[in-house]
Length: 199
Image (spheres, rainbow, N blue to C red):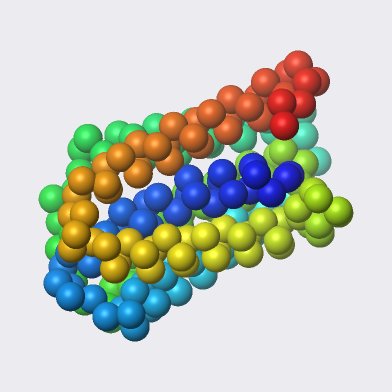
């Protein structure tokens, strides 16, 4: 998969973490650089690990799902994207209430915001991504590293600007991320059914 597509996945996947980071920035009040880096590290690490886990889980069953793997990728991305958009209009009342940066709180939030990335890792496997990079085509390890770094940067940024933006950008970011994931799912399905590579 090329760098452009991986960055598209990375930015889309990081929107949940970015939105929660904005909430963290709001609840902390005046977040320090250290707070932003801590939040970014938690979200970035988990967002990078989850697709790796999903990829290797899917590879274990590749012989059984090869005939319909593109449908699995399509349905997973459609579900994840739809879920992100749905949650924008049906927010959890307590979503922004956790103002602690304790280990327990951050681990819980990092796992919750990275579950979608597990499914994307399965989609990577279904789309035929290799383990290692080959020239301009990125493998799963490089792709997960990019997802990790992208989420770290956006999450840390979200904490710092949270007080300024409050909830204005949060909903738009999640909607955009959801739409992009749905479009990526459609791309995978179209390419496998038609044999035509879009990019």
